[in-house]
Image (cartoon, rainbow, N blue to C red; front, side, top):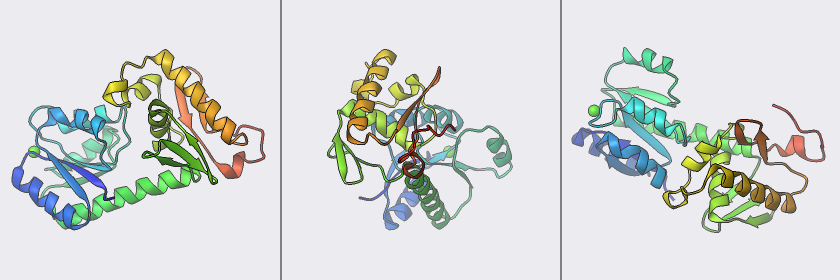
Amino acid sequence: MSDKVLIVEDEPKLASLLADYLRQAGFEPTILDHGDTVVEQVRKSPPDALLLDLMLPGKDGLTICRELREFSTVPILIVTARIEEVDRLLGLELGADDYICKPFSPREVVSRVKAVLRRARMTETAATGGVVLDEGRLEMQLDNKAVALTTVEFQLLRQLVSAPGRIFSRDQLMGGMYQDHRVVSDRTIDSHIKKLRRKLAETWPQYEFIHSVYGAGYRFEFDPASTAGNDSAAGQ
Ligand code: CA
């Protein structure tokens, strides 16, 4: 399956040029030309990477970036027309992964997209210690064993696994659910997590995957090398 790249760009010619190059490189591009629809689109159909123009009709790129980071770890490449802006942007700690200045060559954009995806994948594989989430089967797989999950459990786990070590608040976890599950309250987040942990512990009693962070939320942390046969929880 090819990686989905969401292009947020209000200049139609530039957007379709980028889409052509990305398609030729094996990606599946989608274009949005208005800032107001981006956050909703990412929530409904999360892309593998996002190219985000700063100057947009409706919500601007900076606001979009900030809002996305409340629930998503999708790699974001910010596109800006002025190189002088980059220092300022970097100082804003928006959680963007890279910056590209206009004018740029579409070829360069393609190679930057590949680079952020590569980095994102490396982090993911290294930090999840071989855990596989199979969305088609609603399963978590590890060491030739699998556990069946409910849709809600799968979505919770997928969010946590998307950024190993990062603490997710209950609000963030709720925000990352598909629309039809947003009725879930923060109390039920706790009970879903509890059930999820019990399932995982039944299948892999030697490991701990989901850690509670007092007063803050939950995080996924799994390192088979340090948890196997070791009762002391590695505090980090
Ligand atoms: Ca623009």
